Image (cartoon, rainbow, N blue to C red; front, top):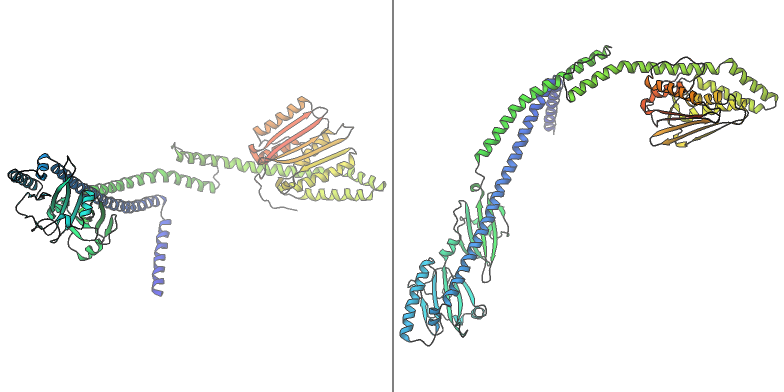
Length: 607
């Protein structure tokens, strides 16, 4: 256990050492090393794939060869016996053969016909390489085509146990060896004897039999093959071997007996198959065996071409690796050097760009980034300055003596009228406003912004008797981040400019809802509204803010809608939308649209 653990630690240490060395290499060396490792891995993977493909290819070739050999030999065997059938029927029903089977023929004529028939059958025996042809007529005539095999006159076909089957089918095949097989005295050890029933073609009366004896050597010839390493065998269905040229191997022979009827591999070398040849009169099993070493794809050029391609790819990959390394690493190193300069506060540095592809886009992006950093810093400064000025103006306005005096008068009037609770409420609200103004957070929640606005309106309600206000906001939106001091300046704008000469009921409506992925904010009043020229002038000033949001607005005595638009645009950019609708004598509606979760950044609060 300790030995194994020690070996694992050594391997792990070696791997870590290689990893450390690689990480400390320069970018160019890393690129070349990575490409070389990729090439080696590609070569190994390609070699494995090639080996698998090559092995499967020649194995597929062997299997196809086995199947082709099975088909070829099965067709040969069927064609051979079909040829024997056709020959037998042509002989049996020829005119001269029909005469031999006739009973009303003179002895002299019969002897003459028997001699002629014997010569003819002997010629057929020579033509068909030793097949024996014989005629056995019911009138006692027996003719054979050769003297080498003597007819056994003791053979009585009508006494055979398969005679009824012969009469029923008109044909019977008898195969095997022994004295009880065939019609000859000195027949071969094994032969196949085919019996055909002959009828008179005029009267259809059975007149005799036609017998063809096929020796074993002719069956063997049907299995001859010129392919080296290919062997064939024929077996009877009872397991008896008819003929075989399969090499003698006891273990192999025992396995052949259990072969399924498909191609399979045995002994990790031989591909064997058993195929059933089923005909009308016999059923044999054709066994095919192929030695795979004789069937391997003999194509050395394939290997040479593969090796040559790998060598060529390796050389090209090395050249390409060097070129790609130089092409890719040089601009990356230039960008790294430029980034180091930026880190050293050399802001705005630019890289010469001679590339017109993705590398060029990368350098252009870097140059744009470098050029925009200064603008971004200035923008942040501007945002901070605007926020600071806005907060200062809020504080200045809220501590304005006139505002404070008016608020105190409201409190005094409430007390004199016996409305102490209302006076206390105004005092509490005034304190909450001061506490809110002292917070320097840039971001608050929408709920906090609405609460602050409602507190401001509560005090204004004591000043403007006919003031009513409504706020419709989905509760689900209340905890969303929201810029500080956005709604209150818009409400204040309505009170100071919309209700300045308003004698009737003054109404302010605040509506905030979600539209797609944005917040839609509406602040509407029923004040005096704006003339067309005044509205056009205000829209033009807002357009100028969109054109140059960094430009400082002219100092004003209050925080107006332009200050709100500038702050919102600097924060949200083109995602911010503003629309002002106003009609003289009827009121004004201001619509703002901002992203639902637009770029909130946590800031440290100073209270």
